Length: 130
Image (cartoon, rainbow, N blue to C red):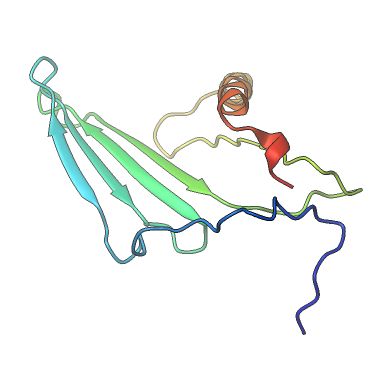
């Protein structure tokens, strides 16, 4: 049964649906770039996490230090319903978690999360998303 949520604001009548390129999960993009000055190898992979709307993995490997590697895994989930009453504006949250090797204290993670939320809030116009 297809029931429309009447509390949601529908977009403008002339809005066009988002058209994506072929499925990112099927075409696993892997690019390698080398910096001449730093001699580091950077690898980008997408579509690694199955149960999210989007994911990416960025790895930086320093050949001089064979054991040093930096990995950043990101995932996007949403849109999700906000608990409580209905709001007509979107909300963005960023959560950071420790990896298995390096441990950062909770206050550092909250500070970085607040900074990134401010950066993304200035770039994304949340009032346009119901």
